[in-house]
Image (cartoon, rainbow, N blue to C red; front, side):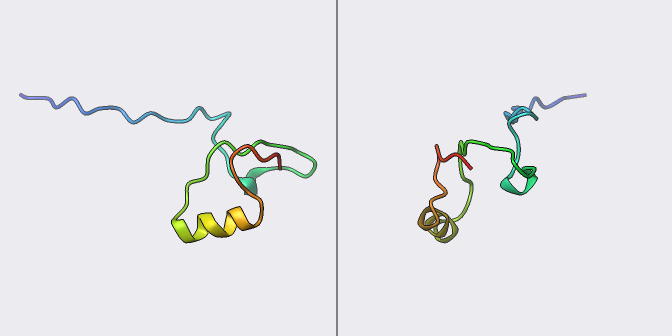
Length: 55
């Protein structure tokens, strides 16, 4: 029986994996990356949400 060895996808550790919606009131976070389409990315940048921003 042949067994395929597929490459494992690298996952972000649970402590770093989150969204802005998951923040509690008074909690701060630094935006590390944004995954969005070009149009949504542009709108977020217009609102000041870019990597490195403290929210």
